[in-house]
Length: 162
Image (cartoon, rainbow, N blue to C red):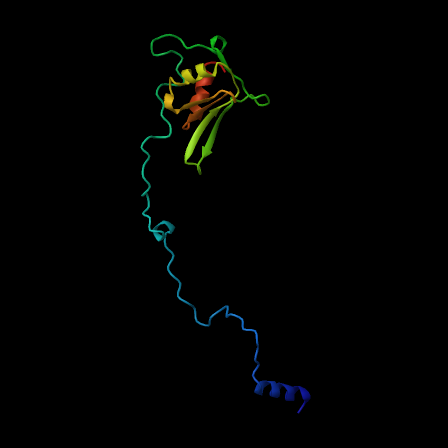
């Protein structure tokens, strides 16, 4: 008998005892897994159970692209208005932006680069935006509208020649 065979027989008789116990990563029999379910139902929510908002995010009172006022007079153009909304310097876009707050649950429309009488611009915006949704920031020369009025304000400014 060779030395290798004697060593193997001796090691087979003495069980290997380790002082380090490792957790068993895989079991020999497969464990039952729970069936996959819809994540909303798993949390106990029913699909579509979110309450509807009392007021919509965007309310238009009038037509922002109208060229004639309801009383029949023509609208003023930018040359005769006491305020000016400057376009961006490089690309020439109107400085009307949309911002999302509170995890995209609140939408704000911001008009920047306003020169002249900011209060008069806010009053004129009141023709088609409810006045309680208009906030004036005079130091920054901004007007903040609560709601998504991006396209309505852009159309309104374009109709006046800005």
